[in-house]
Length: 416
Image (cartoon, rainbow, N blue to C red):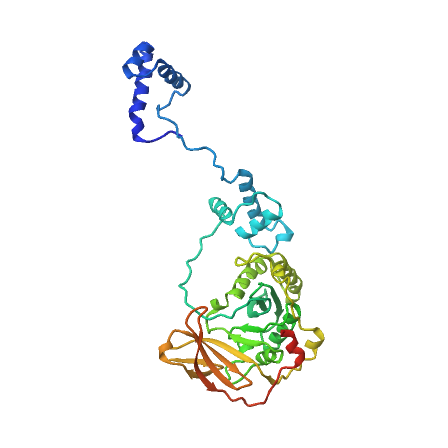
């Protein structure tokens, strides 16, 4: 590529005049003497002009034509080809896989491509070929206390997704995700009543394991509806099995981002790739999708698959025989029910459809309300920042209308 610097113009003009003078009959010695150059210089540019009649006599670019870290054409071709394979579902094994850079990198590693390009290189290659989409700007960060998950089944989040089939039939899919390993379990139901939630949880706990803390949104199937001072059957089931309960802030689905990420992946990689006319056709493909997710998918925030993340840890699954003997009408057992709430402008928060004063100074801040069913007290805690100390703001008496029983020993052993 010609060099376009203005400093090269005088030299290019000398070369042009030298060639023109040679064509007009001047000798090489005369031209060399006039321009203070050698005879070799004159003959060089005369010969060069014969080979390149349209030359501008400017020096060529000195930029290197090859870069040692440049992605090869073969690697670029394989990245683009893998992207097309994932998008058009040309490989049955990758039917449920996403089409982003992480999946492509993982497939290149499996196919022993060495050296394997980095995520940024793959993303840059996809962008260069017009195979990416613009990302949305992130919302400003606001601190909210979150439960800590340092081991499998420390925290499991459950949510409900509603889908409609052709003809008007509705499918309520309950999904549960383990915060530590990103392992997921889902079941499809005709409704989202408490009975369906109970059935899903028991099935999940037999598959993934019994959690120490079960996290829910404020759906009536979990919270018990609008009745004040009432613990729902789902809460009773968790306490009966020795699990603590946590309800996320109201109308803030992004707090539950672990399961929302799974729901988004599941919608794109499952529902968009299947066409169902009846609910009876859903379970088998759903099991296949869950198997792929738990054994082959690596979430953006992790380095291994859910199955690999759970290796080396003891998982306490609920025995099927025990699950079948759990009564329908459950007693109220000793345990803890937590709720994360944002303090309103009047300094109040709600818990189980009841209002409690916290203080106007905490307006806009998030607090945690904890019900201790054994002590029958409701305590309000506040944490100013992550890893900060918890402050006890208020303690309210919370009398219950029925006796509280201890958790059975057989279920306590599942949390050791």
